[in-house]
Length: 236
Image (cartoon, rainbow, N blue to C red):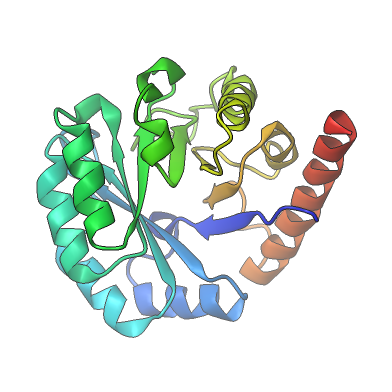
């Protein structure tokens, strides 16, 4: 059976002045997951959404909330998101003093847990914690710098995804691989072939201004199928 790939629209790439309208458009396109970045302005030089805005979003939609915390104070934001009621919380290992505590805190609330790695962070950082994780999010650009349109995906993006996929398989785990950062129409087939399960879709794919959101979704689905066929050929 062909594996299922999740398209997770990045809300920070939508129309932030008309958030409800943007959410409705995403729902109408048939997508069920929202990727929401929480950035503290210190870990990364931007702060697109506040906690109160996410609380308001939760009231208007039943979409799954995939929270990605990019902050120096993980526990505060984890606690706040647990109050809001979200489906998955991912935090960065680079800023975690008490990784096990955070994982257990999230799991206690029957919420999926993910850990995130910056582009140059080694997969060896996942030693001991990988079996506890539902998802590992790999940043393919430096976090929070998406507004720098000149920044390209790191050259080793596909290699890192493939290495993580092999590691997960070798341990007999079903941990999902999420990819974030310039997940573009050009790179999607390669990332899927390498083993990505969740695609954070932003300005270079789902929100590409050349087409409508619905049309971009269809294009992405075609590219996913292409990547899965290539993956099956390699593994077959």
